[in-house]
Image 1 (tube, helix red, strand yellow):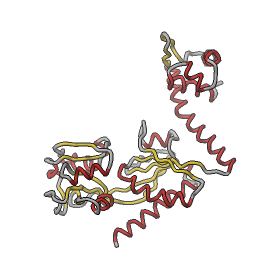
Image 2: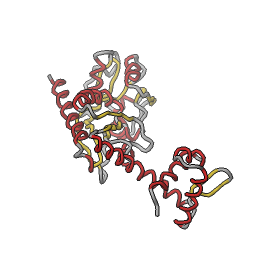
Image 3: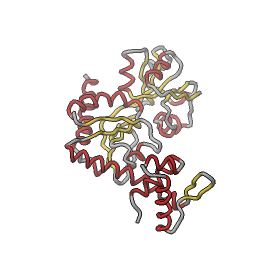
Image 4: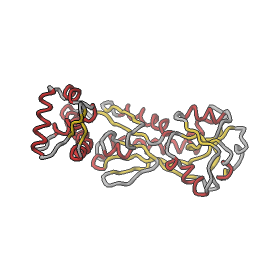
Length: 303
């Protein structure tokens, strides 16, 4: 019979690359681990690994078990931790994944009052995923996903928390600074600075430039918002950011937001979670607080 321990062995041997290292992690002797593997292969009637000198290579059956282990074990580990929390009256950690680079500043404004209201819940923010944010939700690596591009898949639920406008940010002395809006062709001679995100996921490309066959003179990526806008302020390029974020920085440096096209580009930020968990009190409270905080912020900006 296939057991959890077997999946753990497959995962650890593949991760660490040797029986010796896996045996140490699993608190087994190497001989006991080898015996378990041989017994499992006998029970299943097929090899899981092929021995190539000192190394092991997964067979097709082994690859299937590895995929199963990577899918099932994280769920069991989360379930075990949740049961421990229930038994001790704890609530544990809310793990939030970020697919929206400029939303980090917004998130901080939500996390602070949340931590004050939920002293028995910790918050952990993850910004990079091996398979993307949706994959991280399905793999139980995170509990909430902050994203401007929800993928509506069975088992997930997305809640819109605030609206915003994507704008072009230019230096105060830039020729476009006083324009009511910018046209795509006006960016042909510009250096466009963006976060390190695939072009097909950048709104300025897929909603503004590419539909009319326009590309900027050069595309440069920068990870941090502060450095990006310092580059913009010094005339080294232009950037596409949410208007609310551009206005925050406009108070500190010489940058100006300009509308992208006559109608602008409207966007929303969503919080995504596994549907089965949206009723958990501390997770639901975070979503409610995010919606409330965003509404109050919008009121402040319109005063």
